[in-house]
Amino acid sequence: MSSPRVRRRRWPWIVLAAVVVLLVPVAILAVPILTHQNQGSANQEAPVDEFPLEVSATGDDGRTRDMMVLSPEAGGTIDTSALEVGQRLIVSGSGYDSSRGIYVAICVIPDDPSVKPGPCVGGVPDQEQTDVAAGTVQYAPSNWINDDWAWKLFGARSYDDLAAGTFTAYLEVGDPAGDGFDCRVDRCAIYSRNDHTALNDRVQDLYIPIRYAD
Image (tube, rainbow, N blue to C red; front, side):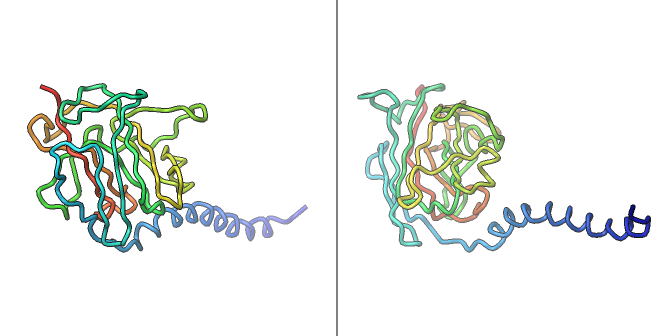
């Protein structure tokens, strides 16, 4: 049987091991956020059509991104100039930097494109893990897409194809009014933007203007 002295000597090593176990995951999540270098602007020009269904832009990082909105019904059409609360939309994109997560939601269009879009309908997507069957489609006012395994534990969904930077978001149109904004008065759009891991980086800010039905 080991002596009390031996037991006491083991405690510092046990504590150190516990600290390492706790700090390593924190470092894995925090270091990429703290060391991220902003890539610039998405460079999207104002759409020619007032309410287009598809937009494209080549960002300062050299990537050409495309985003479009579709109806979930085969052969269905979407009128982005008259959205209804509870209406369901499919938003797809390609050319995105899949090493960074994105939020997809209806947000207020800022006057200055260097400013983060928002506030947004539905707020920040719920960062909680939900148990659903594989292949289940869940519609929500805002979607979170991030392929990092750690963020998946908090409810992020994967990109469709990492190399192509493609994604699919399933939006359910939420209440147009929130804290300090009203999309029946303010100019709003379906936005893609970097998630909290690169919050001030505007390079993935693509938008499709929308309006709520009267």
